[in-house]
Image (tube, rainbow, N blue to C red; front, side, top):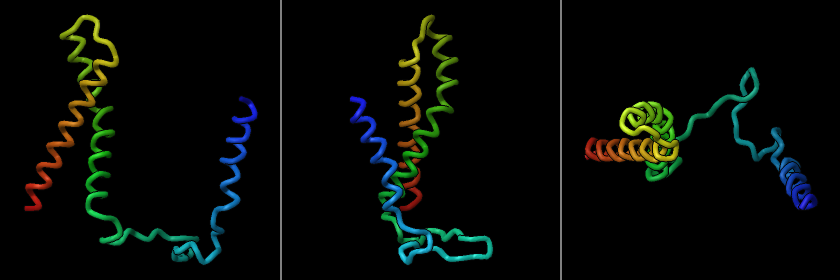
Length: 111
């Protein structure tokens, strides 16, 4: 078991040996005075479905920590011994509803 863990660690650190050199022609970044500058994404660089999935993912995982304290307070008022997994499931459900509402509103605004 120790040999397997050691082998996995060595393999994970060896990937940096195969990375592209910063000065190579494979890296396509513009040079500026202070080193490298940021090049923004092009409008058609990603498909539309990937942009929508990214937005939904950001809203869902960003909403869970914001909704969790509210659900915690409300569930402690309703149930005497509310466990964490119940509160987490409720806050994930509320975040999923927020994502669904955002998606529906976005589709209605596009049409």
